[in-house]
Length: 280
Length: 208
Ligand SMILES: [Cu+2]
Ligand SMILES: [Cu+2]
Image (cartoon, rainbow over all chains, first blue to last red; front, top):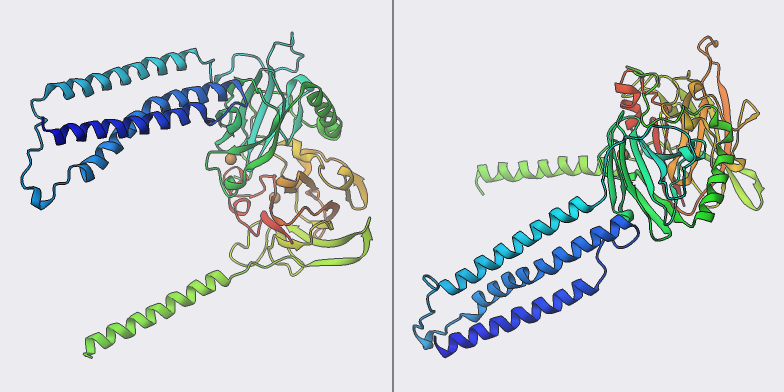
């Protein structure tokens, strides 16, 4: 191996190492979306962080290789012909990159499978019955129904007499069981900060649980093209509040709903459009 | 310059003029707006502006004569209006359409207006039977929603319910508003046509 080539490889290794380590330190220490507002958001954030930290050195190697190939191998005309060295038949680098790829891909596959399997059951079909009821114990999840319609989400709280509101407010630190349905076309309920997105399908009950861990005001948004005002089907007033604030809020909503409560349909996990064929 | 080149040059110029004409027509098009009149009185120092609509089952003219719509005082379908920030917006709706009923009964509730109430033919109401709703006037981002009581099926021609309510105009911006009754007769589930078209059952309020 020529001295020039040795210097070249050493330089390449140094650049790659600095790039990889600096980037990985930033990725490991910096915040990773979707941040920490719920248990699900935190676990997604961890998965994304691990994937990014492993992927970054690979990305750095690709970038460093392109840069060195373009600029590092230049030979000025007066330097004449220089033997660039042969890669073919050089089994050491081949074994190195093949085994590194295998180790990275397989370990990520194992990690991803375990992370997916150990996550709580995500969206699925409900097994609980729809009823107005008090939770048996404080550790029971609070049921909140998301009703999508062109073009606004409304919410029902079966634990509080089936009260319906146009604003989503949930207590911090409590497990929330969301039931998502639609009254017309397919919408999608996206609460980014909690790390959840669930399709809202008419006559279908889409269920997931999540525990919000940070109080704050957040955005909810429809993420399924659903008509004229799909792009405006969002609200910046979704709130995660303390349980005492939640108690006060829900009481206020019950008072506001008093004139309509008797007209609301019995709480149900899906609603048959009524009459079933409007206008057709 | 040869004849061919001259013809090509003239054609390009003509094409450019035609395209330019249609582009400026399109850009310059403003939909008809609803006239807003400032009333003489103020409430707690806020100016009061009046906005008046008529809702009808069929527009009777224009591109879609059989569509349901909100009309301005000229009798044209129109759902655009401008109000000053912080003013009291007093909406009066001459509701002439029959009921088709709400898909989500919750919108039978009056919410977000001053006092969370409306008057229907001068009678104060805070909700209506959702099955009796012909339309709603709803501005989702302000939490304002008012159901409009349909006229009875056997009512004489020209019968109407006069619905009036007030809300405080927010800071400046553009706010969408719409109807939540699937009132578009003849379309799938009543949610097509006028429900999906600005100027009929959906509009914008500009606050400046
Ligand atoms: Cu939607
Ligand atoms: Cu309508």
